[in-house]
Image (cartoon, rainbow, N blue to C red; front, side, top):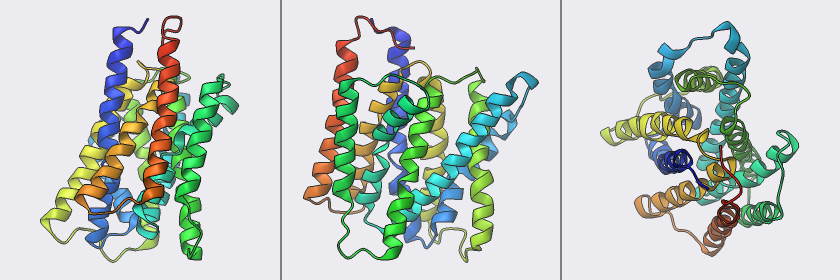
Length: 296
């Protein structure tokens, strides 16, 4: 039977997904302001890092968990830069749909690294996601830079899948505030030197709309959803935390299509529906087994 704690955790993760889905929207607004991918990536985490800096504590018994949280953040820093760079180079819908291939990576990482069982339904879901991702990559007329952007973009779902798998059931307990602080710092450890190395000519937006996007990407699509996800992930199951990504996908594509006038072609819509169907298959499996499986 699904417990009240499980429901609350799932709802928190769903709320986080809605806010995470605003990432491409705010990023593209900042690109229009003349900012590069490295500045946008750093802007997403520098303010949350300052807000969470007061929780950067490391008790002796928590050193291992702190190191793992920092490593997850560093992996995320590389991935978010690759994702935002891809948003500048290839069609936004393609980058977004590649990002949401992370359920497939989640299945593989959960099976190979975390030794978690893989059901037939989960394998079918992963196959659908793989097909959807392949539909979004169209080699005709792509430059070498676009190819590199696509390859790099796949680092993002790999990082997200690893985080979902680990944070759903961490090896050891670490207070949520401390874990958020160390993960966020891990992003900055990668993105700050990268930005300094790139030596961008422009560091700030040129209009109030740009500053709105700057605040949005730092607070609404980084700090707030991270808090919600951390509060909900351990109360829900790995499958349900992955399922929540379907809502994130819809928000990401719809904000681009409606607010930024980015058309979705037939293959984009087909890929989106395939990913959504794959995630619903996993949700249906969990519902069917809800009588005998209690999520933690």
